[in-house]
Amino acid sequence: MIEEAFVVAATDPSYWIDALNVATSVTESYGAVILPLTGKMFSALPFTESMSRSFEIFIKDGWYSRDERRRGLNIMKERGVVDDLDIFTVEDIKRHPYYQEFLAPHGLRWFGGVHINCGDETWCLSIQRKIAQGPFTAEEKRQLGKLGDRLSGAAAIAGAIGDATGSGALDAFDISTQGAALINRSGKIYRINQTAERILGSDVKVINGRLTADDAAATVRFEKAVKKLINSSSAAGEPPIAFARIGRRPLLVYLTKLPSMAGNALAECQVVAVLVDTDLALTPSTAALQAAFDFTAAEARLAIQISTGIPLEAIADKLAITKETSRTQLKSIFAKTGCRRQAELVAMLSTFLKR
Image (cartoon, rainbow, N blue to C red; front, side, top):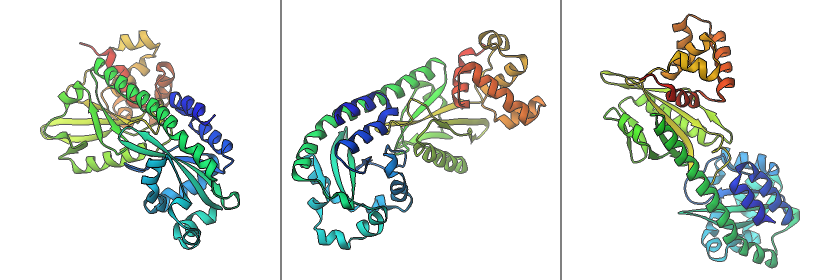
C-alpha cells in the first residue's frame, strides 16, 4: 500500500501528503516526513498534518543541524532501515537533548527511517511514533527494510518528471527567445538555455552555479528571493530584480516557482529564473494581443509595458493611470491569458514580438 501510494505521488506531487498518511496508517504510527540526509535542508518538504508543529520547530530552531539520528545513516544504507535503538541505548535517549528538549514536548520519541536512494542524494522516509506507541518491532523493521528499494524507484520517477518539467520549460523559453535558468534546491543554477547564455556577460554571469554581478545589492536580493521560493511549498513568484550594467540598460531577472514544481521536493529543479535584457527587449503588437486575447486597448497597452520588464508601479506612472487601475487591468490580463505570475506573462508575451 505504501509503495503504490508513493508511485502515485511520484507522478502527481499533490498526492505526497496522502502517501505519507498511508505510510503512517499502515505502520500504526503518528506521522511521517520525507527528509534529505545529504545536500541542503529546506522547509518545503512533504509531511503529515500531525507533524506540522514539530517540523516547524525542527526547521525554525535549527534542530535539523543537530539531528542525532543522522548517526544511523550508514546503518540505514546497509539495512534499508534504521531506528533509535540501532543508534542509542534507552538510557542515552532519556538523557539526550534531542529527545528530551525537542521530541518530548511534542510527545514524540521513536522513529523508523527508510532509505530512499535519489540519484547522488540520500533521502529518508521518517516515520514517527509517540512515546506511548513504543519502538518498531524486529518484524516491522524487516518489512520496512524491504520497502527502501521500491520507494527509491518512486523517487527516481519523481526526479525524472521534475527534470522533464525543467527541460521543457527551458525549451519553451528558448523557442520564445526568452532567457531562462533552472535553479536546484541548493540555490544553484545548474542549467541555462542558449538565449540566457547570449544575454549573460561580464557584468552578470554564472560562476560555480551562482549568479554573480558587479551590482552586489542586486545579487543579495537575488539570493534572498531564491531561498524564499525554494522554501515555498506552493507556486509563487517574486518582483523583478534589476541588475545594473555599465553603459547598458539593466538586466531584469524574474524568479518563479511554477505550479508543476511546487510540492515535488524530490525534483532537482525548484525555481526558474527568467532573464529579460532590456537593451534587446522588443514589444508585442497591440493588434496581435487584442486579437489573440480579446484585450481592451488599455489592457494591450499595459501588457506591452509589462513585456519589457518594467515594474507595475512604474508602468502606472508612465501610462498616467492609478495603481489600482493598473492592478485591475493586470488581473483581467491574467484571467484572459491563463497566466498567474508576471514572469509567466513576460515569457508568453515574448511570442508576440514585433519583428
